[in-house]
Amino acid sequence: MSEDQSPNKKPRLIDSMKIGTHNGSFHCDEILACFMLRQLPKYADAEVIRTRDPAVLDTCDVVVDVGGVYDPAKNRFDHHQRTFNESMSTVNPPKKWTTKLSSAGLVYCHFGREIVSKILELPVEDPITDVVYDKVYENFVEEIDAIDNGINQYDGEPRYQISTNISIRVSHFNPQWNEPNADEMAGFLKAMKMVGAEFLDKVLYYKKSWLPARELVEEAVKGRTEVDPSGEIVVFKTGGCPWKDHLFNLEAELDINPPIKYVLYTDQANKWRIQCVPESLVSFSNRLSLPEDWRGLRDDVLTEKSGIEGCIFVHAGGFIGGNHTYEGALEMAKKSLKMAEKKT
Image (tube, rainbow, N blue to C red; front, side, top):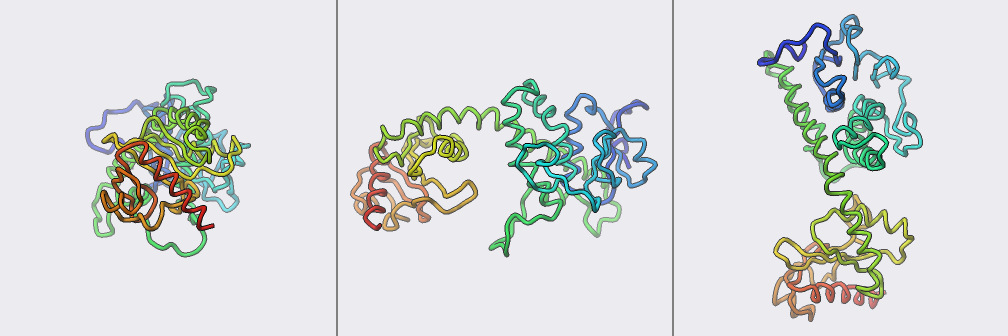
């Protein structure tokens, strides 16, 4: 079954490009692989052929996730062979990622820079293109590679199940077991539309939001001793920017010690927030949580308990708090540091 069998599709030229992938149940990796290929001018109008017939696959200009062959010179990108063990680090050295690639990762490795540059409207050789290329792999494509190859995110049993990642959501577009006459191709196309939209959003996020935040975070980090001599408190001029990734990178680049404990910024109501720096990007634990005696308290009760004017709240988890003024938020941070020192 091909995409041309879907309703309301325009007739295609006999010599149009063809992207081959397998029929039957579809997965996120070939969905993303097909979408990414269609971002390239060469494959923008390509027909998607879904089959396992080798003779039909041989007629395709590029084949992903089926066929038992990985040969970029012939545009064959399958990863199911027993001998296949490629990762971003082996295909694109000196990239650091060692997760085994799926068809999505293979297409991204070989065509990703061109795809990203086109979306960003920047040259392939532009440094921003390479930065975004790396971030999108690390924070979007690698997850799809790992899930498709059955690679656990961590060792041991999870404390809870995550059932809303993009790979699981793609699986829901497949026909149900008791829908024998369902339109499989229609589900494939709906899944590709969803995955494609999220991929584009991710690429554009790094250019429009993440990259511009770097300068703001760097300025705050370098000026932190003007805020407090400890150097453990930073203040952002603008709230809402993505700061964590940049802060960790800057700490490593600038060899900052002691590490930063708190960041201050304004919220949408122009009140001040104090937020704890987590132990890592993927951690829910903080380097130094707000004092336990303050947690879960609000307004006058919190102000009386802390001895700091203008308090609004401290979250029960101790990772964030609020104050009506900058001076109040800063005092919350300073006092938290002093209370921690006394305990040690």
